[in-house]
Image (cartoon, rainbow, N blue to C red):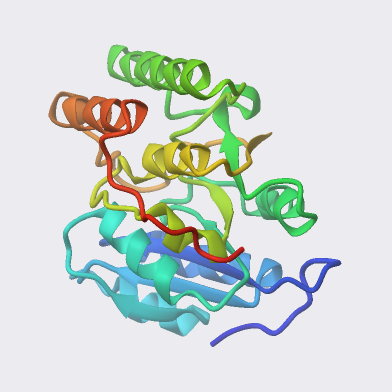
Length: 245
């Protein structure tokens, strides 16, 4: 059930998009919390078996279902279905600061950026520090960011954080294809390839409230690197014509 509130001075409607899979312990509180910052809460559920979809609906979200291929597939489905002019993507594990949503939305609503990514490097992260595995994730993220900055002449500080706001009308022109966690870096690189403006704002990342991260570095490192290579070299397909924006 959408909450009809005016959330930006420019009158832009906002959708908060949350992909989920077995996050019943946290999704209800997150949906309840974000409703004050948006006109629509859209949950894309990967056929959870723990009652996640029911909990989301009871808290006031609209729920649709993806095909279970991964986070990227869920986000792509949600971005195509969202009703808002600006879509805020966030995780269902409680790692993102709900109060930071206006910080992400503001530059997009004012026409200063086409996408704004929350920066954990300036806002702090409880997920990228503390053990060898987290250190490896941190270093990998920094290397990918460095490559992207040099390739497109920008000065971004975080390209992989799932907490971000994007102008919905530009999404079709990006031809997003990732089914997994590489969707975040793909969105940034394809925005830059299209000449779109990408910015960072500081946001804090908390440790997930329940369970462990689903990112297993030894299983995903090649995929992250390959998506970067394809886009840096211009091998990833893009639409021939630009969507109106």
